[in-house]
Image 1 (tube, rainbow over the protein chains, first blue to last red):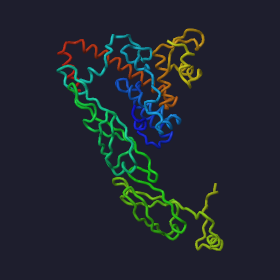
Image 2 (image 1 turned 180 degrees about the horizontal axis):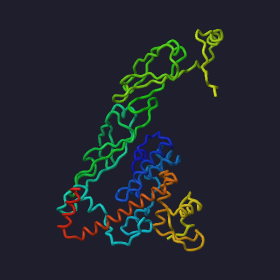
Image 3 (image 1 turned 60 degrees about the horizontal axis):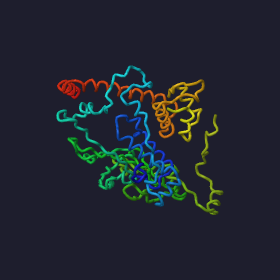
Image 4 (image 1 turned 90 degrees about the vertical axis):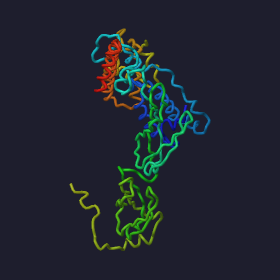
Length: 302
Length: 109
């Protein structure tokens, strides 16, 4: 078995929630009973379940992380009969909306004839097979997804794929590498590699559409008097002006500093001095504001 | 074939009450073999269907009220595939010229 983190498209430091979410997403897609026409679904589902069993158990995950067991030590999923094995065997079952008699259907896979019709393949010369795609998952950093990057993906067979991450790639997007799936054989074209990319969350940035949001602290002095501060953006730090008299919660827009045409927004938070400041207390006690106002005006109105 | 109690024992966290509720809702239809549900007989397809519902609930986090919809859609998919199987067999029983004509017509779609 391959690296369970890679199978689920997770980073090493994924939380239990990350694992559950990634597993559910892939299991929903590949459960064999939800994919009666896809013979490879069973193997995929087994791989995904195996990876999940290993990572969902903190003890096994710890052992795997420390290298005490390898991924092959994950519990084997014993051969199992899926619902599709009965419901899709060409016979009719009781779980039908219209229980007609059995018309002696051919248990051959349904795709054999219709793929010729709908797959646009030639009819003469035997039974051409449709090109087979391969599915992979890849986890990329927030910044790589935002700015674009090239990622190297090592396949189970040892081959290496260079995957170009286009700038602005979104979480869950699938990239298609033409001709990088199953190689061409018996008249079938080479399949494509379909790579589902998950974008890892960033410590500072978060994405809203094409905009990038970052929370930045300011001191009381900076909020009142204004300041020039340095703020990271997805392309590196830039200088930002905090105007005098800036309320906490204010969003400063850094035009064009987001993803593509998007902007970056700096959400300013107020941080008070960490220790006691007697001079500040003394000042506030004798301070008479020029504009007296009630910050809670209307709060208790019915 | 399996009895109710043996089937329950295949799962670590499926209670008799939950399986009974699935039977009550007709999501799974085992064969009555006695007065109580405990005596009902589950054929292979019923067992596989219980596993499917179990997967939907436990692994895929499908809300309970969506299960009837999911099952109804799945039943229709399988039924359609069954009908397509029949069509396919009928076509494959035709002379190759007829098959070619049908394929050509389908491709023109």
